[in-house]
Every structure is written in structure tokens, then in C-alpha cells.
Length: 240
Image 1 (cartoon, rainbow, N blue to C red):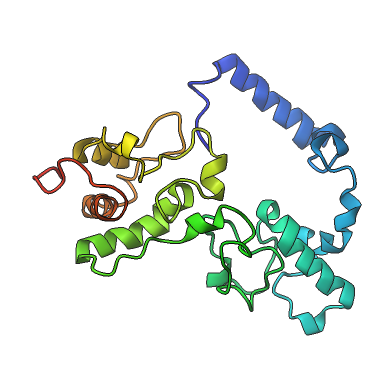
Image 2: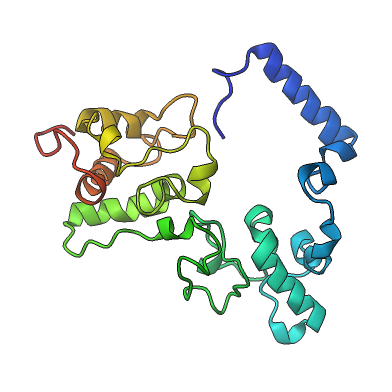
């Protein structure tokens, strides 16, 4: 979440905080509920079979043979229509399948058993194609380290392919930079990008990584960007 200190003044921020406390925490006011007709949910009951999975009453990884026919339908419905906003609700066993990814969690009728078999269409959205890392076979050890770090830390917002056109990136404001865009990248240098990685960008969702990653790791990410997404001016001339 980006800071609003550059958008709202102190009185406005205080007013928002008071509203959240009054409406959501004290009165639980119906007009602030998401699933209402005014927000486009004129017939939310059509998802009733999925409700037990959204509330956590039933775990998403409950084996199908332990569910009724209606519950199995509700589970599929949750994967296809609810999971993007409701996250993974509740599972009995954590594991790699439930780790966050740039395109949220598996959906569109996908079950834990079939994850990994998705393509850009069955992955549920036009954003899924950007969740695929660019394959480069001959990365150096430093670039390989940068790849691992980028995909683990940066791809959530910038997409696995560096475009920022994944599901999360499209909804962030301002949008994460497209690291493959020549117009933007041609105005950057190793020095400016390293400064951004280390210090972040105030007023946006771009955090400072200097307290999370070592300088060696930050430089490795820059080398990965340089090799895979777009050449970075000044890299390789001692700018570290």
C-alpha cells in the first residue's frame, strides 16, 4: 500500500481513519459491504455453494471424496470466481501450491492436483502470460542469482516478464515500471536504477530494498534486468 502523505493532507487522512473506524469497526454498516447491488453484486446468492470455502468453514484442500456433490461444485466455483479476492481462505496443509504469485492463486476450476498444467487461457486471465519468466539458458552465476531474487521479490509487482502487466501490477497505482520499455529504460543508468532499488520511490508501492537485500543481491538483480529485460547504461563500468 502506497503512502497517502503526498495525496491527502493530515485532516483528510484523519477523516478517512475516523470513517474506517466508525463504519467498519464499530457499526459494521451495510453500506460499506462489498457484496451489495451498488457494487455490482445484485445476486450474490448465486455463489452460495462457494460460501463455505470463502468463510473457511471448509478447507480448500479437502479431498473431493470427502465432499458432497454440492460442496465439490462449490469448491470449483470458488476457484473460478472467488479466490482472486478471497485469497486461499483456509487450507489444512500449507505448501508451495499456496505460495503467493503475481497472478494470485490458481483459479478457473483448477484444483491443487492440476496446478502446473495451466496455459495463458486456462490461467484465468489475460494477465497470466506475464506470469511466465523469460527463459535465458546461459545466465552467469550473478545473473542467475538476480533471476532468483527478482522472481521471488520483484515479480509480484513487476511481473515475471518484467512488464508490470500482471494482475497485481495492473491494479497498483501508479503502475510498476515496465522494465522492458525502451522509452523508460533508455533514460535510466546503472546509478539511477541502483538508487531506486536501494531507496525505493516515496508515494508509490516501490519499497527500499536496502534493509532487505544485501548490496551484492541488489546488484545481481540489476545485472539480471540488464541481461534479460533491457540493457542498462553504465553497467559493467564500475557503477555498483
